[in-house]
Length: 248
Image (cartoon, rainbow, N blue to C red; front, side):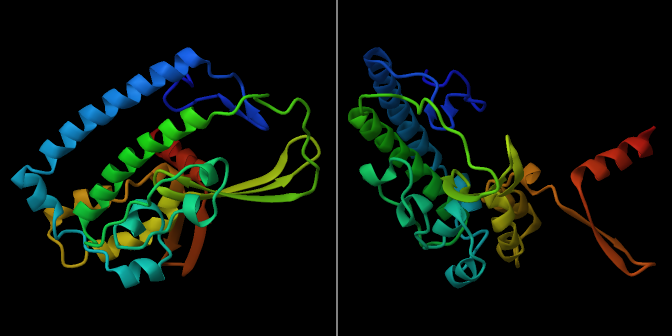
């Protein structure tokens, strides 16, 4: 409705957005939010009341609070263990300082807790969107002229659905010279062995899924050569090339 796509939005640009939102789009957006909230609430009330769902989620994938804190986990993974860590609250950026919302936290430390955190965050997100649409300011939608200074370092931190994302960039003359990203999945993966500890094999898929892993965000690999006693980091493109050579 506003961005025209599910993932590759294209509406955000450096210094602003590509197009404005008129009153008609605001009205339609509020209608969509109302319908989504109603339908999702009905769905969740039914889903979490199913005995089989409770049996699979409650008491499985335990991640104790102290261990979650020690690993510096992020997002719903850490908030499901009773720690209210959220960049939007801890270091408000963009328009988050102008809206009110509660950080969704559960203390049960299991798969159900992490699921409920995500459920509550959907309702909080709906409320945030309503506030933003109500407080949308007038004026220009983008900076007319802006050029980054070369040879500067920039670090940004935002709260993504999976947790904190950190970007670090070094500017070049006309384009980024270096750019690195730390995705939340990379930070949360060390929690998986703890969650699986003393669990049944049947609980493994749900437990791993409870951190909502994005494995393409963690395209790092180590090759351990036992004969040579050597460990080397292998980029994803090297693994892809070796795979193609093996199947030819």
